[in-house]
Amino acid sequence: MAKEEKKDKQEEKRNRKAELKALREKLMTQQQKIRDKGLPVIVLVEGWATAGKGNLINQIISELDPRFYNVTTHRIDPEAKSRYPFLYQYFRHIPENGKIMIYDSGWMEDCVQKLMGREITKDEYKNRIRSVNEFERQLRDGGYLILKLFLDIDEEEQEKRIRDIRENIETEWRVEDNDLWQHREYKLFRETYETFMEKTGKQLPWHVLDGKKKNAAACEALKLLTDMIDKALDKGRYVGKPFEEKFPLLKMPKLADVDLSMELTDEEYREQLKPLQKRLAKLHNVIYRKKIPVILCYEGWDAAGKGGNIRRVARPLDPRGFDVMPIASPEPHELARQYLWRFWTRLPRTGHICIFDRTWYGRVMVERIEGFCSEDDWKRAYNEINEFERQLTEWGAVVLKFWIHIDQDTQLARFNDRQSNPEKQWKLTEEDWRNREKWPVYEEAIDEMLQKTSTKNAPWVIIESNDKKYARIKALTIVIDALEKAIEARL
Picture 1: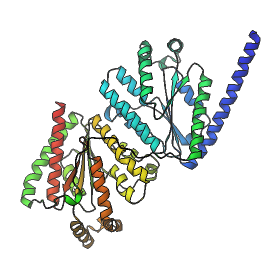
Picture 2 (picture 1 turned 135 degrees about the vertical axis):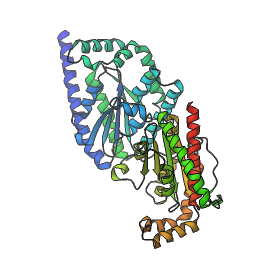
Picture 3 (picture 1 turned 30 degrees about the horizontal axis):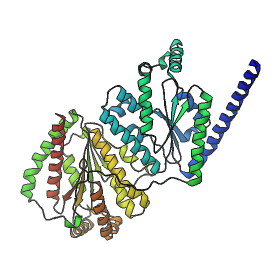
């Protein structure tokens, strides 16, 4: 009987190895197909310390072309965890279309460890759970394939593996203090992991694998992954449908109803400009010391005066503590990722200011009007943008959004001035004239944008800019007021 049992186990082992080899070869073949179809794939590998996450990842990637996949771990960049929003380090690593990204632990481990270590409050943890669901849903709705795996072992098995690793001089370094802490609090960690999976597994399910059976776990993971890819290759990229969450929105006027008659004399402008800039310079030092991030967003009509307005705000700032991000048409590597990626990767560190000259709102303006994205894409974007900005303000950022507003007659006069002045002609393009002809269509889109995305924590402010002097003073005043309130809240 013993011989027969041993023989059966050997046969089972051979069959498992053959199955594993076949699945790895299938994934290798699929890799070329997902490149051709432009399907981006994310595999999140979470689990217990010593459960074999590294081995599982090696099994997945063993036959893949290394030019078209990457493996990342959330532990490699401590600054990303301390100076940027929670999701920054995960969003910035999302793969391009046609590539595979494998996260060696990620947002689950990050959330659970910080909660268990009391580095975040229960309310902050609750916000992170919501942000994780938003992150995964936004990627899924944008066509990403996401597989979430949890490698499970029991307390006794973990104790044995930790002991074996520590007893070997060549491997003892692999057991870290966090691993020992996790084992000491095994039952509490298990409860927290299970709750996390329950709260983040409804729209994209978790798959729990038996870490005691390495080859069986690898086979199951590869089967899940190759089946998911097969379905996507057959049906094409998933496109999410629009939906609206109820954000606390501020009432905004229609652009046609905005009074643009406000103006300042040259003397009034000079009297106000320097004191405001001096005040802003002092506040810049305070927000740096208190590590308050600031994000200023500029949108507006062509020739409305965005550049001059930005210069007056930036002039008093310490150049080491701010950046101006001019946003043009996306580059190929940006088009190959979810549209918010190029803004996540440009966020300021804590204590710094980032001024965006045009923003993520291009999704619901130029991309909507010019047909650069589908109707589902731009309709879904209102909610995605509100979620993005809520995550920024929960991180502690001051977010202000300026619509620099002028009327059509003022725009025409400024266009003509640029055309007749050799030093300004570079500012005027054929696209500017073409966009001017679409003024009514853009105005309709802008009105809808203002109504649907001006939230209490990230408000839109319409800056009347028929008189540029008035517009500059108004913008400076609003920025100063917002920074003073943010500093006062930190006292």
